[in-house]
Length: 101
Length: 418
Ligand SMILES: Cc1cc2nc3c(=O)[nH]c(=O)nc-3n(C[C@H](O)[C@H](O)[C@H](O)COP(=O)(O)OP(=O)(O)OC[C@H]3O[C@@H](n4cnc5c(N)ncnc54)[C@H](O)[C@@H]3O)c2cc1C
Ligand SMILES: [Zn+2]
Image (cartoon, rainbow over all chains, first blue to last red; front, side):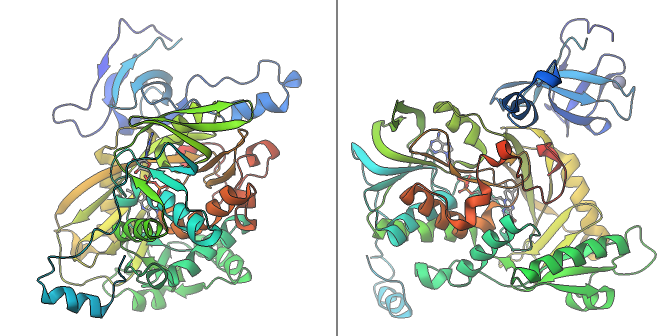
């Protein structure tokens, strides 16, 4: 994936009626073109055969659920179909695109 | 504290209604309590009420950071039903339904529980079959359920478009006649008054900012009104369960999401039941003031903003006008959002936590209003005895460790899909 040249700010200010998500490939696009894929910081156990129950439970079920900046994945399903990593403040919906690599 | 009755109404009428007493006190917090409930929504207040009423505890307090019922209790679309399929949910919600049926009398407070029925519409033969399966599961658990065909559904909801040449024709539906709606504020106020009468201190404008514990368990709470000691702490904070549990070092299988609702301008009586559209997602009823009250899915991404976006509203408004074309010129009067704690299996969590003395009541997803009486009942039992009640045994936090999750929809560990 290409690197985003500096942060691009999405917004819900002004007359916007939904989230505008900056896609590094397609530009600023409506939220309805995307599918939400959740917390981007969750990682699958690196060596599944060695992972114990606690590691699986943490991966499958436990979430930080921060009240503030949230690192999350959105798939641009009605666009380039790429999976994007987006930083959004969940208290005010302010969006900043991050390095998608 | 006086009882409300026709006689008391007449008596106060004679003095111009100027001498009613406040329905609950406004006490200063004591230095410590036997048990403290965090969160003055319906669940926290019901828990305090049943702790006092069923278990004889009265050295207890409810701490609320804002005002009573200002959270999801005062923001919801007030649908009450017990039409669940899985045993762990069905028996719990049905206990709630039975409590609702006697609640106004028990509380001496009119919660305006109206058993106007809840009809889930099906739009294909396959969907109707899955409803038949759920209805049969309900009946096996002793819960009322009726499968309606298209004509019966049309007769039950006059004015609904059941014509064939629409995108999602109505094939029939699953009806729970005992379901309906209730007055949300009255539920909070009625439980608050009942708890207060039994000695519970209800403390508003008191935000919990920390939980203190030692090696034996919890010892008390840091608040903006100082430290309050507590032998037992029950969390009932809806969308903020993650943050409160984290104060005691407990991690939860929860994400917070925003759910929106709207009301239309008020009109004369047009809809005397609760209808849900099954091909996309809408639930609608009419309030006593005449407003159509409706909602649909959560917005679908983590949020603490109490403010959503228009795509979801457009989605359920489209469902509404598909089903009732005659409502298409109604204007929306208000819209708002509430923060839901969505669990990884879509079912609530009520029970003990790994920290002794700390109890959790959360993860209500979309559906916690209907659960309020049952939730308070079993949470009070859990706090008083230290053990879950039979009705919330399966709703434990450790089901995510044992693998006995309760996933009604079979959606998997994706909270925004439940
Ligand atoms: C738009 C919408 C529609 C809904 N529709 C329905 C429906 O039709 N049927 C249904 O059954 N359910 C519905 N629900 C869900 C239902 O409203 C909730 O599950 C239920 O009301 C939760 O009650 P509660 O007492 O747990 O939470 P709340 O009423 O939210 O109470 C929690 C309280 O905790 C307080 N609190 C939080 N943090 C702190 C702190 N640090 N210190 C002190 N206090 C704190 C909050 O201020 C709040 O008052 C809906 C919800 C929404 C938002
Ligand atoms: Zn794209």
